[in-house]
Amino acid sequence: MKPEDVAAYLQQFPDFFDRNVDLLAHMTVPHPDTGRAISLSERQMHALRAKIAQLEHKFAELIRFGEENDEIGEKVHRMCLALMSAENFDDILQLTMTHLLDDFSVPHVALRIWNSVLTKEGDEFAPVSEAVSFLAGDLQRPYCGTPCNDEVMGWFGESADAIRSICLVPLSRENAPFGLLAMGSEEPERFYPEMGTLYVRRIGDLVGAAVLAELG
Image (tube, rainbow, N blue to C red; front, side, top):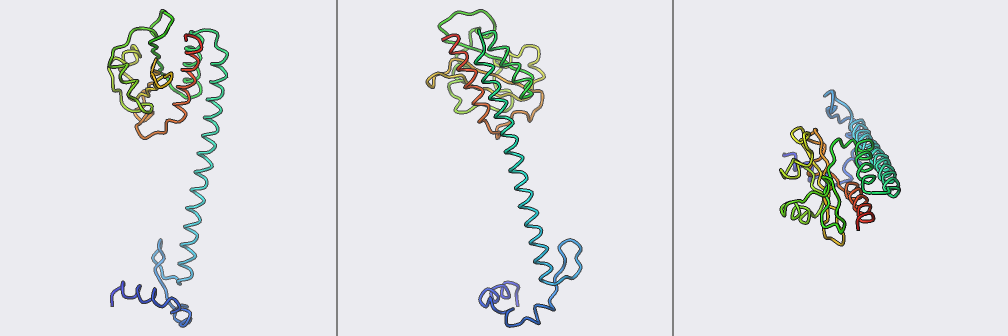
């Protein structure tokens, strides 16, 4: 008789052990860890404890993720309040870099603005190529991964060669990009394709709104 036949029989007659209680009491199976013989009831209890432990671990993970999200949300809120207090573009730039470094551990930040009604001096307003403009417009979500554009990497200056992962967040008005926020890290896994981008998008929205309020 094959194991499948036994399983099929027990499924067909679920009351088998009710009618053969003595047999159930004397049956033993190997312990999953030690291999010693244990009763079926003990084996069931072991499986139940293992399942409970898994559920407790999953629950602890959910709590931890929730706490982490609350912490990130608080940091984004602080950044929002800071940007609201900015008096000029230089304040916006400095506050963005400071909060990304201090609260989010992002060591390298670059910003480019185009199509502004105001003419401003500084690297942030240096002309960008059509390729970069197209890249910003083509992003359906922030890009996270390995460096993908030499021109953008040039924005990081001397730090560019050390950067192993980047995040590019388009700044848009009515779905039309007018800038790009670039973040970089020496850690290859700091920004990766599968990472969540909810808070990164919110940061981009905050920076974009602050820039628009200042420059129009």
